[in-house]
Length: 236
Image (cartoon, rainbow, N blue to C red; front, side, top):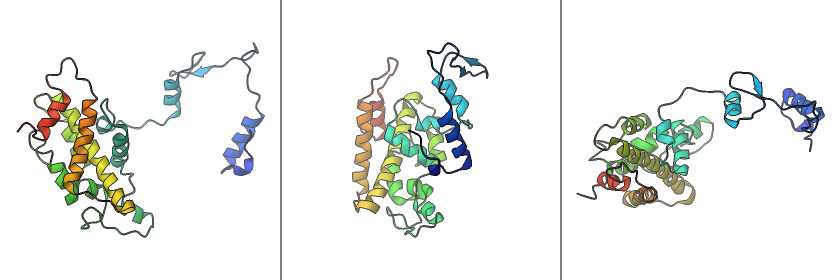
């Protein structure tokens, strides 16, 4: 089906539509026609690679340090997605909505004391602080002050069972960020709120569920779930 040129949004799109709709598609049965695919080196060959094609088409950007806290083997997809957008400061927090010209109340619905922003919602809010504090002690000395501090906490931890501890830390960061955003939306759009202790139990259950689904590595001295219990002082 050919899309009418009147639906296109620019002259270049119209031109491209005309060219694509009038070009005869090569046929594999015609010996005079062959398909060639561009390679990493810039030449052309008969083999198609989706990864090569993707890397040729995309505009690469420098690798960011926080990618290891967002994307990793044990991640929870929905939590990773929200954390990714939060790292990019792309969540529609109230300060951003106001900057777009929308007339919305600017106060954080979780604490009603300061303007809602990424920094406030996830770290400076007293509600968020109460949740982060639940995980402080054996491995996390104090609540992270911002997303950069949370990333450093996860990636730079040095100590016993450091590899496994870092995994648990990354999960804690992701799940807290995800549930804080969900709690914020629940209070705004559904008028549903949870006390900090109930919220903590929701975070705790989510982390336990994912850790229970993971098989321990052959060289792991402790399971990730066992290490998580140390985080919340279950063995105290």
